[in-house]
Image (cartoon, rainbow, N blue to C red; front, side, top):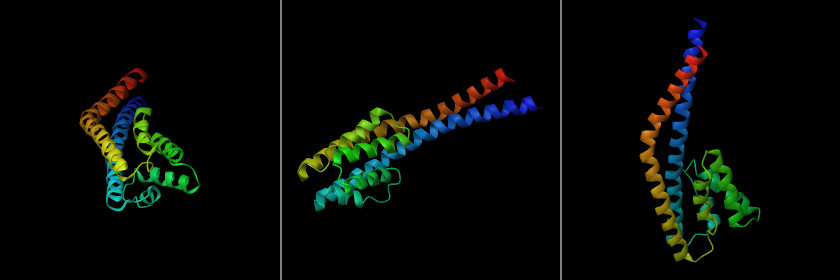
Length: 168
């Protein structure tokens, strides 16, 4: 009886492990969607008001996954750090916490490394380019999400069953 219960717990834990991997992928997809919203907000503020970087960062609201990164960069800017240093540290810290790899971190770092350095048209062009690149990444992740969620769940359950068979 105890072996059966232990085996069932191992199967459940394997399944939950697979589900966790799927949830992490879903959270990353949500981050990209919210990051696109941030880029759209920044583009609008620059395009219609010529808003400065600090003010753009201050006005970011309603973007729960991207907002901590922007807030951290703003705090570093307020302490006197340059935009490149502040953005890099904020991006690395926040995106690693969400489980992103170095390639995705570089994508976001690329945007903020020279944010606010060029004139209005240059900033708008850079935001437009970055929006297209991130939009493509988001689209690819959404396509993968449906397939990988199911795969992660099944692999987790199979690993749990295999572990239960070996242990029991």
